[in-house]
Length: 320
Image (tube, rainbow, N blue to C red; front, top):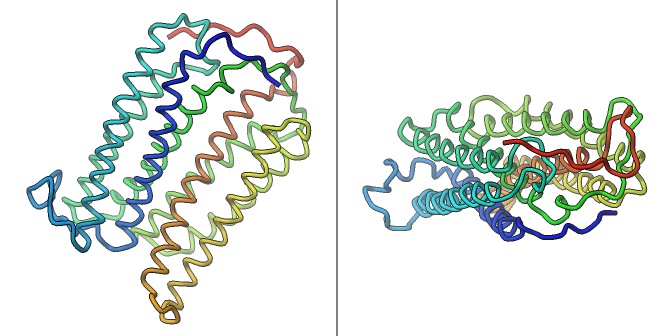
């Protein structure tokens, strides 16, 4: 449904963005392991660990210092990604850049700023002995950074650089754009509630209420994609992916909570609970990223009800 671009100046930076996103996913797993193993204060100083870059990797130090090492590596990747995007965009005329509002270079700068702020919040969580508000902000910002890097990977992909052969009109109300944005907002709020619960800012009731809202919105969005655009492969796939992810997330959330209540029935209760909780946390990050990417795809392929559809209009130039 798209025509191939004449060249791929973003090809290598796209691959690097995908690699950075994959490393960020590993960082999220490492961070979830720190919290789930109560290892947040296993290293009492920052930015060094017991005054060293190579402390003994035993007990909780393994999780906390390992998390810091992965975070440092992702920080270096973020610097490289921001510089690379800036250089590639600086060499291209505005009319030849991917169709995205604003500039990719600033999205790279935003990702870099997010990972720097993430590191500072991580340090504050240690120096101030895990205050719930700071710890929750640290966990939430990690999700935003992951979504930003994943968005860069999509916006530099070959699929995004191609011009659609046709655009699609959405005459329904609420529009697919509104539904997608509502799902993103709800998932992000739910991640904040989940982080606050994990860091003991409050109980589980707000998180459970948020899960009901998120589930309803995602099923609404996925159903609208399936019914309104049955002939668009990208949107059919998006609907299927959203259904699968939210279903798995609900099952993991229920299993993680059940394991906490009935941990004594497992041969290795702590290991089972930790595994389920970590899986639930990182899948929540994937749900956020998926809703963000689905929203971008909707804006790429679907025009508002009053717009003229058919052959795409000439791509407008993007001024920096």
